[in-house]
Length: 204
Image (tube, rainbow, N blue to C red):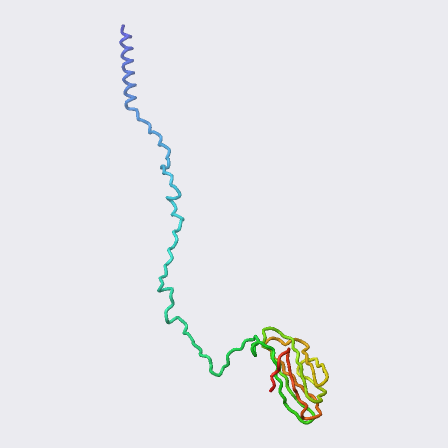
């Protein structure tokens, strides 16, 4: 069977050619892999940005020597001595006089045969305002008693007696000066008695 041999030869040659073609076949280049960006690990905000917290600035402590002013910075102390000629300041409050009582002093300023000019000074040495009442007694015939210096009620009692009453009370520590003038018939007609609020007046 020659055809069988021929067929086998042909098949052998075909196989050899196939093997040869496969062995010498040029391999096609593999497609390049798509470029992939390198993987970067996630970065936390704390690592990328500087810390926003600001530490408090320490205050410079001042020593006692810095706080205390130096002697050169202290203002010079001025000492003023009171002047010998200056008088001591007076209080606005009235002063108490005459041992805490309301007193009166009577004195004659001028006199002739027919007229007498006198002065009556009242002082309130108490601690409160006081109403006042003065009783005057004259010898002989005394008439036309006139009083100036303050609002006063003059009440004649007869027989040479007169009552002087203040329209208002006399303030504490204050004094009032009254001018008296009266007429008489004789030089012997003069004051014989004086009382203020029940007490005797001082005769000068």
